[in-house]
Structure formats: structure tokens, C-alpha cells
Amino acid sequence: VQLQAFGGGLVQAGGSLRLSCAASLRTSTAYDMGWWRQAPGKEREFVGIISSSGDRTTYVDSVKGRFTVSRDNAKNTVYLQMSSLNTEDTAIYYCARLRDGRYWYRAGRASVYDEWGRGTQVTVSS
Image (cartoon, rainbow, N blue to C red; front, side, top):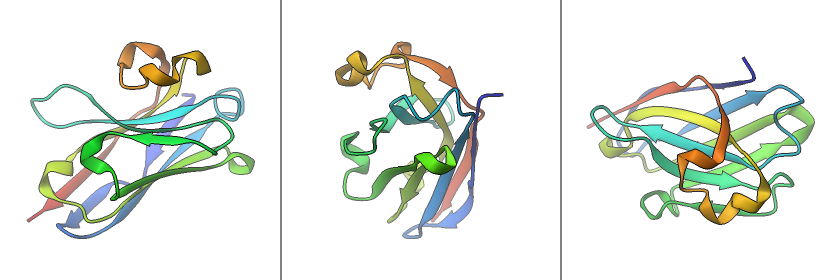
């Protein structure tokens, strides 16, 4: 397994949670890394992405101002800090590797990611 997301759990609405994505050295530091989520009965949804150097991020509108993607390349880890959570954030969260930096502007398409980690469940209770 090259990628592994963890840190999910049960949290009350309005609360915060930080997810981590541990990556093998080969997988992580040279690549832009994204976060996705899939709620029950829904398609997988793009959440946000961070550049390989960490100097650039972009997010889906529904999480802007609430979620922050960051990374620590020394630890080969990417983070998703989530705050002001609501029940619509309930989903399995995945990290994924962008196939090539040229696809940055297509980061919302699952097909441009070539490696996906095991997800972690986030449940937000009302």
C-alpha cells in the first residue's frame, strides 16, 4: 500500500478533525496530492489539492474557508484540517496522487489521479 489515510472518526457538527495521509517516499514528495471524499450513495467528490512544494492549494467551493490542505514533505505526510464540520461532510475520505503536475487545472477529475489510498471514515453527527 502506497497511500494510507487515517484520522477519521465521529465528531459533532461544528467540530474539527484532522486527517493525515501517509505516503511512501516514492509516492509523495514529488507529486501534487489531493483529497477526495465519497458519501453514501453519492459519487466520489474532489475536496482539495496541494502542490508538491506546498505553496499552492485549491478547494471545492463547499469546503473553502473550512478545510485546509497542508503537507510535511519531511514526514511524507499530507494533512486535511477540517473545521466547522456539518453532516454533509460525512463521507469516506481518500488521498490521491495527481498523475502529473500538468493536470493541476483538472484536479477535480478522478481520472487524473494515478494512485489512491485506503480511505478513512468521517461521520459528523447533528
